[in-house]
Image 1 (cartoon, rainbow, N blue to C red):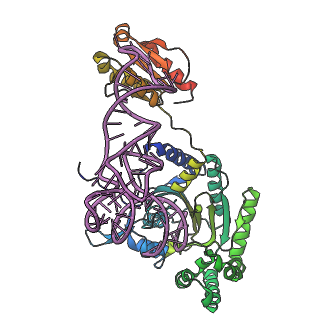
Image 2 (cartoon, rainbow, N blue to C red; image 1 turned 90 degrees about the horizontal axis):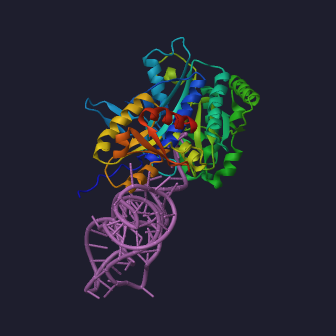
Length: 428
RNA sequence: GUGGGCGUAGCUCAGCUGGUAGAGCCCCGGAUUGUGGAUCCGGUCGUCGUGGGUUCGAAUCCCAUCGUCCACCCCA
C-alpha cells in the first residue's frame, strides 16, 4: 500500500450517517426562508481580497490572519470567502439589484477561515444567511428575527436565547468608541494582555472579555445604549416593541458588539450553552453603510448568518433530526437468470413510481447474506426473485419491519402493491 | 499564534513498574444447500501516529516531530 493522502486540518468530510440531518436542516431552513418571500442567491466561493478587507475591516483578525489568500495566475490577490455578506453586497452592486429596489435574499454554502479547529469551529464551515436590502425601518429587523425564531420552532430546538443590542449610527458609535478608549486608557494598568491589544484594534470587543478579572472594569465602563443617537434609540425601541408584540423573548445585552466592522444599529445573536466555547448559533445585524462603502448607492441593509455545523450538532444532540429513510424495497435476485433481470425490473418500477426507493442486491453471496444485506439496508421489504418466481411471473414480497407473512405477488400487481406500502408508511 | 489532554484493528477501547499485542462491535463463513433480525461456532483485520535514543529486548522509558480533541484567541 502506498501512503494515504492526508486530509486538511479543520476541513471535514460529512459522512452518510450525518447527511440526513444536514439535508433536513437545509430543507427546513429553505422552506422557512421562502415562506417569508426570501429568494436564493448563489455566490462565488472566492472574491478579490480587497472586497473582504474593505467590508470586514483591514485590522480584524479575520482579514489579518484567518483568510485563505493567494495570487491567481494573473497576479490578482484572491481569497476564499470567510463569510458571504460582502459577496452578497458586491453581487447586488454588480447587477444593480439595489437601484430603487428592495431585496430579500438568502444563501447557503461553505466559508473558510484559517483558525485552530475546536468544537463548533472548523476551517471550512457552512453558513446559511438571510439579507434584506433597501429597508430602513425596524420592521425588517423584526422580520429577520422572526424568520430565525420560526426556524428554531420548525426544527424543534429549545433553549436558544436571543441577545439584542444597538450600536447606534456610525457617528454615535465612533463617539462612544472614543469614550471607551479614554475610559480604558485611564485604567491601562488593569487591562489584561488581550484587552490592551483590543484597545488598539477593536476597543468595543473589550466589553466581550471572558476574563473574570476584567469583569468589574467592564461593568463600570460607559454603557453603549446610553450613548445612542436619538434616531437609533427610536429605531431600537420600535424593534423591541415589535418583538414584544410577536411574543419573541430577548435579553438586552449592552456588551454585545460584533467582530466585523460594518455593523451599526441593531445587532443580535442567538446563543446556546450546549456547544462549549462556541455559543453563537446565529448572529447578525444592520449594516447600513456597507453598500455605499463598497461603491454602491447608499442602501440600508440588515442580515444574519447561522452556523450549520453548530446547528447540526444541536439538532443531533437533541435527537431532533428524523431517521434517514431506508429503501422501500431491497431486491434479492437468486440465480443468474434472475440477476440478469433484476435491474430491468427495478428500472420499470422506478418509471412507474418515481418516489420509490429501490436497492438492487449486487455483489453475489448466498441467500443468507443477501437477506442480511436487505435487513441492514433498512428496507421496508425484500423482493425475492428466483427461478420459480421467474417461471410464474411473480416475486416473493417479504416484510422486514413487521411480522406480516410474506406474500407471493404477481409482477403485474407489484407496482400497486409497492405504492400501497409507500403510502402506508408515509414515504414517497 | 498560546496552553492542556489524547494517538494501539474499520469503530470504541484494554494492555504502560520493559519480555515480542488483546476484547467488544463491525465484516465474512457455518449451524439453517431459497429467507434477515435473536443465539451458538469458526474466521479475516495491526508499519502499537512518525523519527531517533536507552536496552539483550520498547506499545510500555527518554527526546523530537506530526496528527487530533478541548480551551484561550477569534467568531457562525
